[in-house]
Length: 380
Image (cartoon, rainbow, N blue to C red; front, side, top):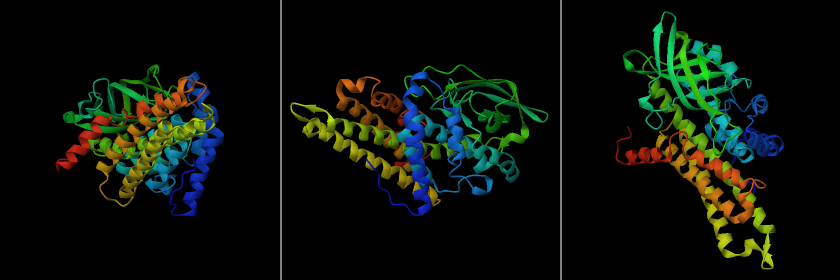
């Protein structure tokens, strides 16, 4: 079902059309086989980067697209409707670049951002650890200063792009037990990606632990002030949650479109099954939820673009949109009946992928904590 949006400029319309064409021609035809084989589309990500889609919300002076977040999120939605693994990669790469863009010095930005935003490189965001998931402040990886370097020891967990990334944005404890942010090159000795996790979905997207075995990261790669890393991480996550919300609506829209088309053509008892009220009401509820989720993430994006507080709205968008994706994809499987449970149709894959959305970038339980605290006047 074509999505109609108010587009502020013809340039934005052209960018969304580019994303749709890329999804139709390059992403959707490859998704099922790559996910079945568990093969990450690294060369396809370079194609996405060369199309200018890996640095969209960042300044043009450093090689970014210079577009607002509202436009960037709509591009993510279009990509996710084609193949979630690719859209997730764009979102994670954007998350990985954010600390340098927002907190780096002018010299650091000039030195590293052009390559990071130019389309060839891929980033990884390394915050979580085996014992520090929702409680990000509990991380234990440590970086001790040794002359011109930090020597980093510890283990990061659930890292998207582990083993594929060209740079790793690390959050570690430094002096006085404070958390700091380091930008590590993938070739850093002692930075050791581990075998990929075996997941129920997103099987083409590599997720693994990263062991830091006395990895030496030059002190010039400290991003922001030492000890300010947790604030850097949390500010990045607020933006990242909007990326996941947009991806969730893209997947939900794809599932809704597929299920609608299927029940229009599937006949039982002498008529198309879409004519049965019980099924058509499922579609009506799904369409309403998708539209509501889209409005919610776009509202948060507009607040962000205007420089206004948006953190609570980002949590609401992440919560609602990912719960919507889970519900809509599950209903899509139900609408297809037995056909929905086999790999011949993509709805079962979308359902497995939707589950992850409720977990990463802060579980939906954490989003409820954020929202509830905002209502009490205690956003800490």
